[in-house]
Length: 267
Image (cartoon, rainbow, N blue to C red; front, side, top):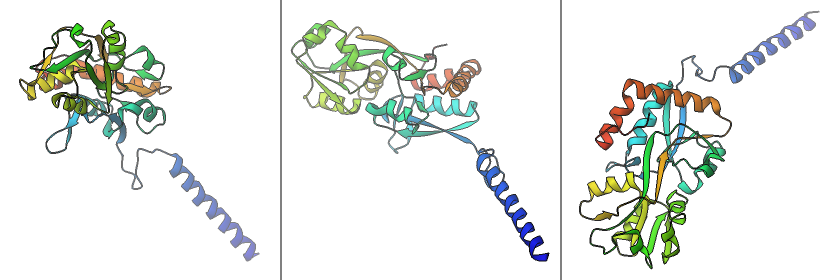
């Protein structure tokens, strides 16, 4: 009788322990093993060579307009932003695979990209422009005929050039992993011009004075948005609410004035 009772008690204790274990593994993931609240992390994929949106400063810290915006948005969501530098060519793959939660770094909204990701409302205007060296004899888009042009691979600079009439007259188009490499080849004379985001070249023209010349006009008018994985409408709604709150409480305007000297954020 004692043996049967002991066996019964042992089995009951096992079930209680197992039940507690199951509850812990499937319960509130916002608490650690000591019962303390944990801050949810939002992993944000960035191109860390895309000044002034996201780039490394002289101390190798990740800084920029989008970095500050994402940090503030995460705080408004009760979360913490974790930035993950990625190969910009594989940004949508990184998102769809779940390795990142957001694409947020001067990410142009296009119809093609809308088929792959969800977008927030636009938050910043941009143009695809042509930049040459300050002493270049290239003055207009037509002067690109017979020239070698560079741009960032799988960025919106490619379609901007392809959809412009001058594309048929350009001699060669060289693609680069990032804009820094393209501008480096421009300065060394291996390129005649670079197709680039206006917000990016405006930054470099202030930090490297009298080096570059921006041609008048735009190859394409664009808007930046934040990319969210298809099917994750909950995150999209939460993020958009945070951005709307930042517009209302002045956070977005303050960040914009710090990086651009004016409030450029779209409402």
